[in-house]
Length: 233
Image 1 (cartoon, rainbow, N blue to C red):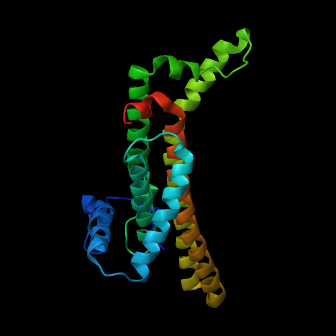
Image 2: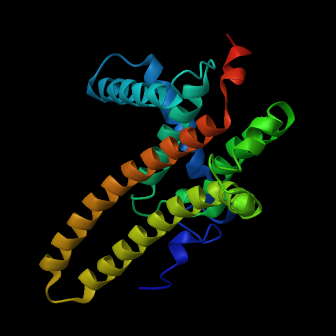
Image 3: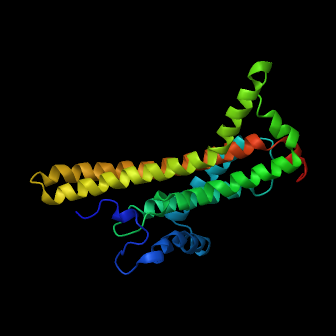
């Protein structure tokens, strides 16, 4: 079966690609999705429009009164980029970029760090007030500040680790079952289990993309205040 983790090594040779060329798969979304704007209406483009409208309504409900132009489009781009990378990794001999912390943290850290820097410079009192929940006894305030600070710092890391861990777990199970199906006498049973697992992985790819997008938007909405939206009104 070979090394179980070789499919997660960006330096491993996969068909004609080796070394850093494995990361080229992450750019496929930037090449394929823009073509949709020049295609005639079909079932694929219609499905994308339906997903787009549903997510836009969901994000509008999350942000509420935060009327910042283009903020929803950022998270919609996150969703489509992540779900495309997740599905692309399910194909044979395709490098799974979304299973690496380099990929996931590159998405979660910038939006969190940019929001934190802006909040510290322009909403310092508001962000400090978030560190002490309403009704906290005076004796517990230092402890709550420490807990809330740690909770805020680990948010982008938990987002990235959650996405990468789910992708790694699913691909490891697919690799194990695929190897067992080649050497087992009950190959048909393993094949059925493999089909069921692939179906589950497709669902996980969609769910994790949605979870990453919604949690990122919730974290942003928590830090932003009404004063931020007034600057763009």
